[in-house]
Amino acid sequence: TRQDFSSNDMFLLQGIASVAAIALHSAMLIRDVSVRDTFVSVASHELRTPLTSILGYADLLLRRNPPDATKKQWIKNIFDNSQRISAMVDDLLNVSRIHSGRLNIKLENVRLSDVFEETVDLIKESTKKHELAVNIEPELPDALADRDKLSQVIGNLLSNAVKYSPNGGQIMLSVHYDLQQQRIVVGVTDEGIGIDRADQDSLFTTFKRIQRPETQGIRGSGLGLYIAKEWIEAMGGEIWLESELNKGSTFFIAIPAQKSGKSG
Image (cartoon, rainbow, N blue to C red; front, side, top):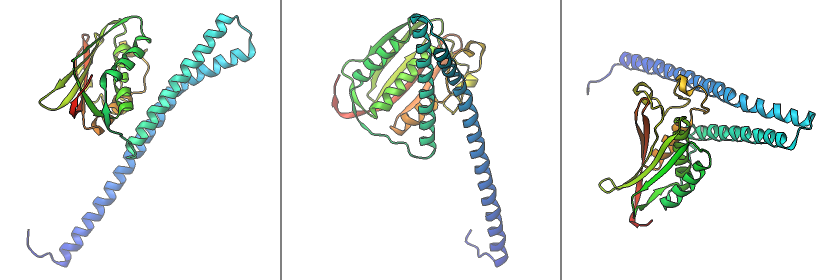
């Protein structure tokens, strides 16, 4: 309103504002402590298992002289678990950068066929139970994206498709150009366990993992999709999914297309 406020009115409003500010500050501190505690708890739990394995096999190598085949397997176990720790540390650092506003996105023209070829070839090496199929619309325009981060996002979606279809089946990477919205849409489809509707809305938050009997042995930090969402949105795109329980899932990302022309 345009009415004048008396000195008592001003005193009351200042008091309310002060109390509200203190309450808001307290709530933010509680939230930060809660997030930090969850962060530390999940990180320590996820790091403990591979670290224990590394220490165990390293101790065996120091105290014993096994046959070459056994020694090679122990060293492989150490290497695999070291990679798990490295991936976890990378995820934690990426989340920290996102929370602190230090996310660095470098947009450039990206030839998508090269990105897809690299990521699909890498995933093919990780599984013998799945058939990877690729359906890319010809003459796609270049994308305007951060090449390294886009490659990591697609790799993460393909890796998840493998992990969450433990019985094998086909994994399809499909790509088409949405002319109306001037964007490129990438879909990763699996024939796996699917995701219940109740879990879908929170799937892109930190430390969210599907808790079902079928997922008990599946490793992961629960950070990959959160990081993917933040990265894709920072590039001006979006990410979403369609899924039916026990029938599979399709994760989509849409990223802006470079408007200057088309290439492979």
